[in-house]
Amino acid sequence: MGKAFNGRVAVLGLGYVGLPTAVALATRGVDVIGVDVNPKTIEAVSQGRVPFVEPDLAVGVSGAVALGRLTATTETPEAEAYIIAVPTPFNPDRSADLTYVKAAAEQIAPRIQPGAIVILESTSPPGTTEKVSRWIGALRPDLKMPHNHDGMTEVHVAHCPERVLPGRIMIEIVTNDRVIGGMTSRCSERAAELYRVFAQGEILLTDAATAEMSKLIENAYRDVNIAFANELSMICEELHLDVWEVIRLANRHPRVNILSPGPGVGGHCIPVDPWFIIGAAPGVTKLLRAAREVNDHKPHHVANAVIASSERFREPVISCLGLSFKADVDDFRESPAIEVVELIASARPEVTVLISDPFINGSIPGRLGEMSNVRLEPAADAVERADIVVLLVEHEKFRSLRHTRFGGKVVYDTRGVWN
Image (tube, rainbow, N blue to C red; front, top):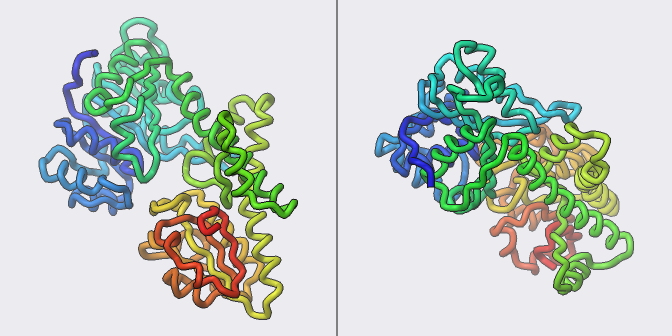
């Protein structure tokens, strides 16, 4: 057990990772300043509110703010530790877009003092943590940064990727093991001091590039396994077999655990992270590329099947249930459900497409809000009016729909909930 962290922490990025991390620290007695470019996010957190849905997070935010341990601002302060938790999307060519990470590093640079800890939590390609060190060093040549000082450095830079599941973040952020990869062994140890404040799982120390790669392969592993299930679903459809029954029986083998297929793969991590590996080693990532192609194709496969069925009706109403990337969360990033609906609505602009999702709060996400033939309806009404019902996300509210509602309708259950 290392020594305890003592100081103030600035968390840059108050999204699905940054805000829970800030709360985990603040509720354990650390003074935390959350930094975000979105004034609405700053306003919400400052009032003790959460700008998105995540179980147990609201209580933590309100409590930390009430105690004065958590504040929020658009300006980067001086602190003893900085955690970068900003988005890392990909460019049109699917290379990593590190614009937000670089901007965060450049925000930190003028404020940082000798002895500070800088931690990159954002999922990134191997070598990004070193780039953070170089970006700060370029603006602060007076500091000894770990990328060019083998001995005692004045700033400790490390990567500690998040490993949490939306819907369980506040549980897993505490209980999951944490991988911490420092630019030097001393960097790893200093970063571990901070995470020991709240982490109850084992803290595993390594180098920065290994930590970066370990996070990427966690999601690439899942992507490959989901691709197998998704391809299996298309094979079974071709052979007129029930994929859910096939998987159920195959999984009775003691060494087989096939995942469930779906309409694609969504969220910020799984559809994105494999491309970071492919970009780092394009000549030897044939399997990862193939898995990505299978999963990227699945929304088109689902949409094409629905479109083909709709041609049996003169003026069909198609109801699509669920738009978020997974069940019972309000996260619509990279959602295959949205892509399916967009494809259907674009292919049949004369057809009414009803959508329902209990987590839509305000405007319809994506391009769907601009499509004149797409309308938001409560689930029961959408099913009642539909000729074709497409289940895209297994929200608990949809699981409870009575099967008697589906009489005489074409039903596509992409999640195997109603089988």
